[in-house]
Amino acid sequence: MPVVIDSDCINCDLCVPECPNEAISMGKEHYVVDTAKCTECEGFYDEPACIPVCPVDCMTLVAD
Ligand code: SF4
Ligand code: SF4
Image (cartoon, rainbow, N blue to C red; front, side):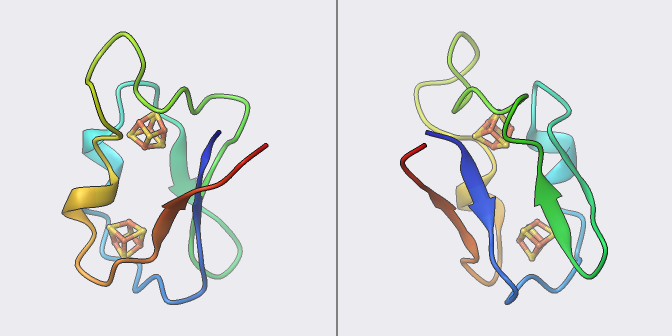
């Protein structure tokens, strides 16, 4: 279950340093999560570290 970022993303960059797997980077129009790298933060945190820091709530866990 990776995190995905929707088009509400304002490219604020706040989520990037939270990711222990360096899975978040700037995409064509907004930030994106590399689903191959996102582990839901397993082994690092109990919950995805990126979701709570997003000011516009545009990050969600999706079924893969
Ligand atoms: S859930 Fe964790 S591993 Fe996945 S993108 Fe967010 S911070 Fe990175
Ligand atoms: S914290 Fe949210 S709004 Fe900011 S870059 Fe990440 S996904 Fe986009």
